[in-house]
Amino acid sequence: MVPASFVSERLQTVSVPARKLFDVIVREAYHGPLRPKLTGTATPPEILEACGLDVGEFYALLSALTAAGLIRVSNAYPFEEIQLSPEAAEALLLSGRIDEGR
Image (cartoon, rainbow, N blue to C red; front, side, top):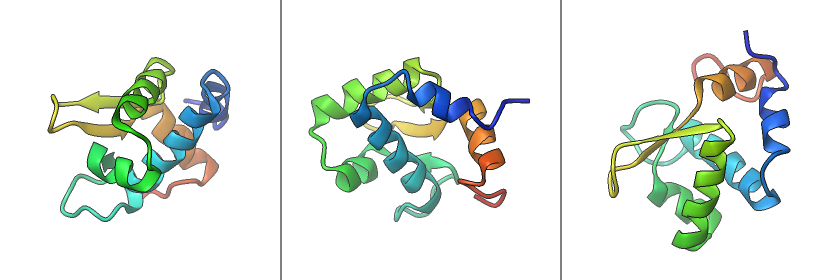
């Protein structure tokens, strides 16, 4: 079992802008405007629209979050899908930041 502190501990290893981007990813993955899509999945267009980063900065921060084990990116550009890592999703569920129904 992953501790509820997994996400906060991992976020300490990335920059403040990456932490803010992670919050946007969580929000868009579970409550974003694009439908239909898999629950818990966000796409670069909806994240970029919500966060206002330029594309280069976005991908650099995305790389940092992936390296920290907080997210996973599947599929190739331009069809990327961004999901929380299983460990991050479990920790956020335990902490109450997301619900079972997501």
